[in-house]
Length: 538
Image (cartoon, rainbow, N blue to C red; front, side, top):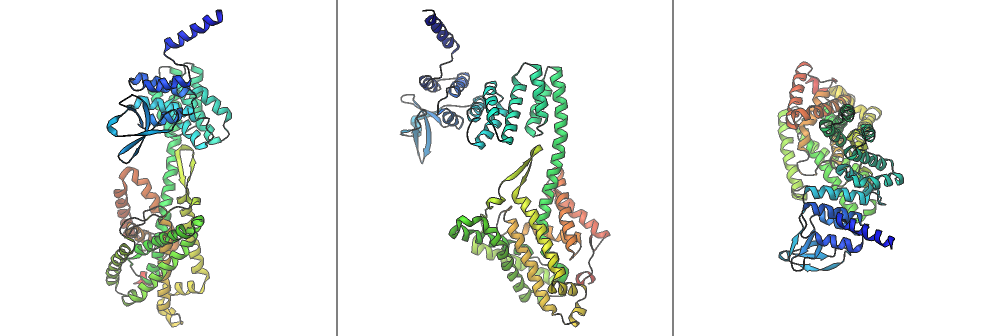
């Protein structure tokens, strides 16, 4: 009898607190109550649904936060909707089964505001912290960090004991520390939380410690938060600098690929080729065509498409280059203005040719799996695989090109023509043959640049126009025809641009770099590394 009375008393207490037992019936009643609930009641309902342990709890909360939780006006039944054309397909929240369809006029959305969304995110985080999917656990830890709900602490501690992935475990520790810092009343616990958060130099922790240091009343906690904030800001500044340098080297590698072919033709032949950017564009479209072939006929081998696109782009762009030299350039040697105008007109023709064949819109060029993703480093620094590969690729292309020019008979002939055309001709070197193949080589390298650019930029008829001016700046700044100068010039301009952009903006940064190069050329007309040759001597 005494036991029965205790049970009745406990039920009365639970009822008085307005907390329903976590049963199938209670969750059904809680969902039904959302129809007429105010914000406070909806938040309480979210907590009840989250704590119910029901298999569909996460799906219900996802529908709620995604504004897909409605009720039928006729019988007030709560449903999850999915739009299909002009009608709405209705699903039962607890079973997930389709129960019919309705017009929009016959259903009404259950409203959700930012306060409710914050509560739902925290609840969803708690529900998925123990998921078997690592990605879901990571997202759950991030959600708990943002909401810092005290109800998530037991689940977080349990998840930490089970977690084996180091990155996810670190994120969970960060979420636990943030939650304890915000909700705990124990000074020692909060100080330990600040100490742990100091090891996570990311913008989110900086924002959290900034708010704590501004509003905290406990002097010891405030002092610890201020010190931790200073350490994190110093660490973030360092890693931001590293990130800027990486971005600058990444931009420099793109400029290097785009300019190195121009350095060859400009250095050996003295030709100002305004169609060089379109040869880069042709390389990018060759990559698109190769990938389309792989998508259609060899989808399982798509990862090898770039390996095929590189030689294909070199050959296609190189063939265009030889045709341009034999058909136009060779008749205009010694007339730089006419050459400039002819190649500029040719660039417009090539752009229109590509528009006619492929259309004016951007074309999709995909990243192979081994070029997708990124390396996340402390301090919020993220290094993407595609840019890392392009940096390595640009240096590899430059190294192979230098070996070719120094160790092959044709490379020796090219250098001979560069240093003294008349003497090279008198020694039996066919200068016309060298000119054609040199122009083809420079154009082929431009095509390879197009392969790289297709992985980080839109492939469109205007692709080359974005890099032609920068390519000329790199060549002139580094020293006409000097590959080492092209390397130094490309990376210097890339890094300087990236350091200027946060203060001056992208356009003004380019203008400032251009002005600086003009002033530099006034003092050193031959660039950083002067190279004797026909173009310089004339």
